[in-house]
Image (tube, rainbow, N blue to C red; front, side, top):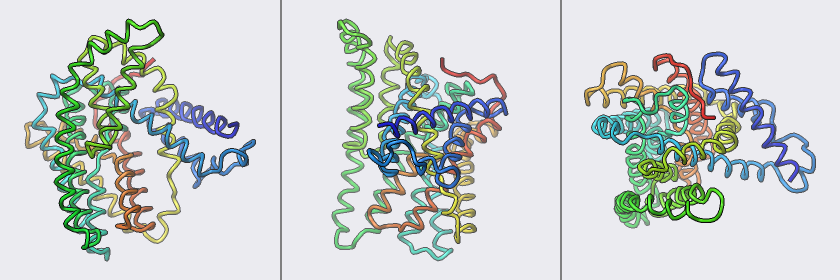
Length: 404
């Protein structure tokens, strides 16, 4: 395991040092932690290609990628769990309409714009529709980390972004199911349309059941805290967080991060909220979250731009403006001010792991090829990198806040 330990150590140290440098330059540390991964990617220093001690005996580069991806996935799960714990439900109820209209605008405009441009540029309708589908994705994990540092997670705009991201996830899955049903083999068409209805029903049942079970969390943690073993309440909460994440994908047909966020919101309603937040932040921000952010950068491959630079650049502009204009217009229509609407739009730009999941889905099912997949991954990474910078620019300047 020597090679794996060394890789993790290099990533952790690099992420934290680059995060520190980013803060010194006036940006959120999340940007520096992602850039640490970019510098160590195959396009730059190629960390996973180094002749590491005993690396060829236990781990191949592919195995290292897979293991790091698993740790990174835990990082995003815990990050969304913390975001849920920090969510102010009272404030979120106040922005419920704005979250809904923002999510709708952030799905419709990128989907239509992306699909029409891709088809105009020569892509087939199935591929074009799938490209539009990926542009509808929103990953709130990067945004949540940036908002936490900027002390804006509980703000009016922060609550709207988190609520809109959850709704966006549901709408995005519906669009993905619809496009998949329309583009896969015609012989399976009826089964796919039937699957679409089952997907919608599964999502509705999951959200209702997940929320209704929240009333048992307080007595459960009281029981766990009485056990004669250390940190039993925290272990119970984390186990439920992982169960909610698993069931979100297995039964609810939504991203695992949505399940983690819901679990965090429900635990945030208990008297254990402060204790869980403090304990989870210790191991999440010292280990799992830095690995997640560095892993996002580690996947950057600049050579994927070769031959498609113009197409990818225009599509990237549609991806960015589609969210800013679409989500911003939705917030504006719901009564937000111009500056507040701009902040919501910028906060919804990042595609993150949700975009990567959609891209992988299309590649695995033959809807897109490896070339389109590379373009989509690059768009995901660039929007993820730009989101912290944009949030820093549009939110009022405050002294950043960092978990201990």
